[in-house]
Image (tube, rainbow, N blue to C red; front, side, top):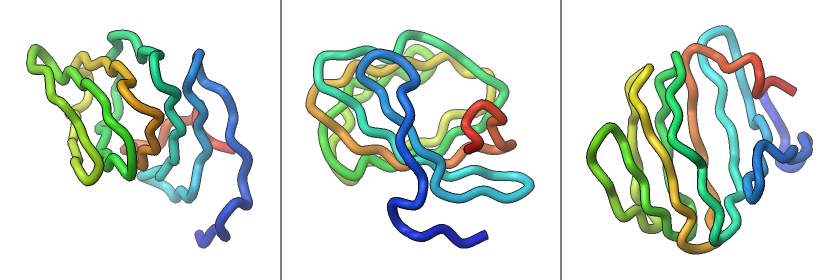
Length: 107
């Protein structure tokens, strides 16, 4: 699959979090997120491996029991079923890959 820039719209997931799927196939989906300063992605876990890259902004990110101060250019990989949460310190843009595909993120 090939996707042109801005061919898919952002949709709200929770307060202060917008997501759009960029491209997907049978085993992975790549998504872009816009995160609004002052909001929180509450603690959660899911059966998807999650790999991310912080394009811009600042986040305070907990993976398991460890907190990380994420800044532009930082990246992470969260194994499936590991609890994590995010405090959005600055407006941020994140690119994340999920495997297997998250059906709830498909267009």
